[in-house]
Image 1: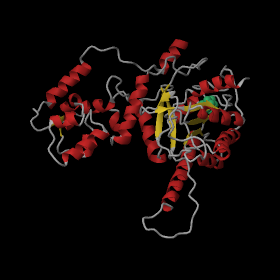
Image 2: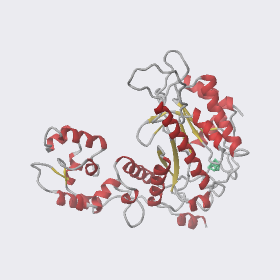
Image 3: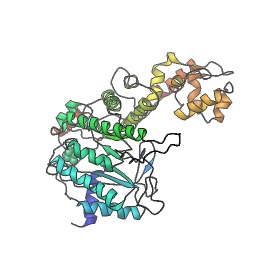
Image 4: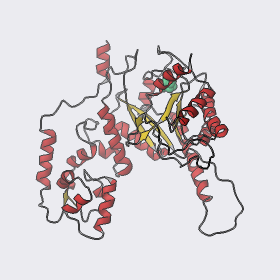
Length: 431
Ligand code: SF4
């Protein structure tokens, strides 16, 4: 099989993995004529991270052969797809070639499981080792790790990769057992815990070795080896099982809290060829994935707890409005908020106010009382914000403004709300 054909197959097979944004790593470059690549380069961008950042990684599988049979995966052993496998050297050469042609900023490498988790992981790690040690490659490397691989291999992976990820795949243990019975939820979490310890240890050592402000003559010590400086991430498939948004966000909150993940990526399930009857027939609406990202953002940067975001009821986020506005409308007794007195954590709950706007408002408020025209100058979206705040000289219209907003959102005729396909739909159609 030609290299081009392998590339076509193994890049296509990797497209289902959403967890490959190249943000948050250490800055490196090859200025001064040393090494190749940088983590800040600009190349052809193939996709966007959920935060809007453009990414350009060579995103491939080492192989799409796999001995596992995860029902949602196009590469499962029972899938009738064309198979291919790269050698280690082929991946290394492709990465270097694409990098030199300014097509990519780095490599995202995952793999189906061949022979055993250790056998596969050894090869994935070897690609990163050769790039770093033999070619002094300084671009971004994201390795997808196999949770059942040995702790030593995971530790080696972290020495070469900027980011490591282990996919939890499904939000609940039951979901994983039903759709990926060979995967072990406990092993996934154990491996995440190990990675977290390695990352924390490396950061701790780096801190103790940071230069002090006192110029002292000290014996030179080797720098602490970095371990996955861009942290670890994971991916959850949305809509492949019956899990609701509440349980998805609860799982994310646990993962952020227990393993300090940098990111949880949400990937709307899309039907695959020859799919099992246990899967839905229709694709999960992309807007559901989008709402989950917004909710995730609220948990990480706006101080919302996961169980505040999805209210009692269906356990699902509203699809027609964003989760922050939905929360505000459901908690209107907390509004209006005095924009000149409210603490940061309350300002962050006002629809239309982002983290940056809030920080700008707090700064401006130190020197003067804010009026509506100040907000305009600070580029705050007045129409969105005014129903939820009070300002000097501004008539107290919060209650009526919110009622009008509510009526506009719920009363106006709108397109049929997108609906998540249920497992029941899938089974009924297939039967
Ligand atoms: S182990 Fe990974 S590649 Fe193999 S079937 Fe499961 S999800 Fe697909």
